[in-house]
Length: 412
Ligand code: PMP
Image (tube, rainbow, N blue to C red; front, side, top):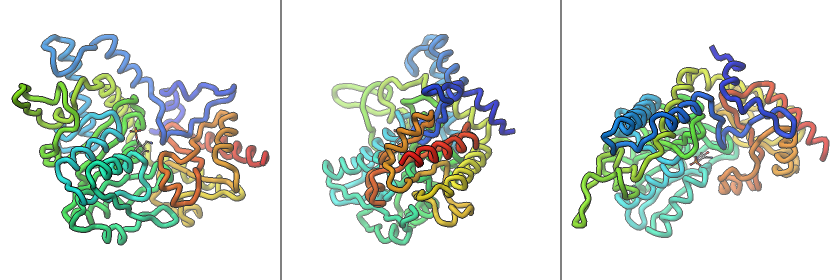
C-alpha cells in the first residue's frame, strides 16, 4: 500500500519549516531528500564497521568489503545487469559520462570520428565531449527536437555516418521531464552497429529501468537523486565493453600488479575504481534502493504521474502560463511520455523573481537554465521555473505551489 503520510515520516526534513512556513520541497530533480534508513545505515557503518575495503585481512575490513560488494549486487539486481562486473561505482552521473567519454575516445576513436548527443542534454553530456573535441579532434553531432521537446528520429538516423562511433543521450530530460524515445534510438543505433550510452540521472529514480530490456551499452546515474547519499553513482556497462575500454584513472584498487617496468590492471569493475571508494555511500545507496524497491518502482511511478497530471491540470488555469516539453494533448489531460517535472514560465515574469518569491512562501523550486543552456537557446529563453516531484510529494503541496504562483502573479 502506498501510504503517503507514513512515507513522509521516513523523511524528517519534510516536516521542517522555512521562514516560518511549512517546507514544500519541489526541487527533486536537483536532489532528493534521504529517508532515515539511509542515514541510519551510514551512521551505523561509521560507528561499527568502518575500515578500508578490499585490502585488509582483518575482521572489520572484511565486513566493510562485504557491505560494499553487497551494495553492488543490490544495484545489479535493481537495474537487472547480468553480473556485478557490469556495475562500476562512480561519484555520480557526471563522472560516469566522463569515464566513458575519456576511455571510449582513447580506446576507439580517431580524429574526425563522431559522437551523437541530443538537443536536450544536461551539460554533463555535452561538455566532456566538447573537451575531447578540442583535445582529440572528435566531432559532436546533435539530434534536433521539435517545439514540444520531442527528439527527431529520422533526423537522428540521417546524422549517422561511417565516422559515427557512439550515441550518448539522456533517458529523461531534467528540464522538461520528457521521456526520450531511447528504445527507438537504441534500435536505430544498433542497426548501424553503434553502442549507446544513456544518461539515467532522471529516469532511474522514477521508473523501472532494466538494462537488459533496453539493451543499452552504458547507463549512468546518481545516488543522490534516488534518495541515496551525495558523492556516489553508478556506471553500468556491458561486460564486453568494460573489458575492452582502457582505464579512466590510475591508482590503488584498479591494478593487478605494479612494477616500474609495467602494470597490469584488475578486471572490471575494479579496473575503473581507482583509489578508496566511498564504501559507506555505496551502503547508503543500496539502502535507498532497498527502500524504493520495497515501495515498488511501479507504485512510485504511478504516484508521481498522478502528481504531474494533477499539477498540469491545476496550473493550466493560470493565465499566460507557458509549459515546456508538455504537448497540447498532455495539457488537455491525455497521457504522454512525460515524467515528474513541470517546467514553465508565466507571462514575462522573470523565472528568478518567481522562484525567489515562491521561496519566501517556503516553496522550493528550481529556476534558471538547469545546466542545459543549449536547450534554453533552442527555446530562445533565459531559463524556466521547474517544479519536480518525488515519491513523498502530495497534491496538497501542488495546491500550495499553485496558490503561491497565483499570489506572486498578483504582485506583477
Ligand atoms: N544528467 C541529468 C539529466 C541530470 O539531471 C543531472 C543532474 N541535474 C546530471 C546529469 C548530473 O548529475 P550529477 O550532478 O549527480 O553528476
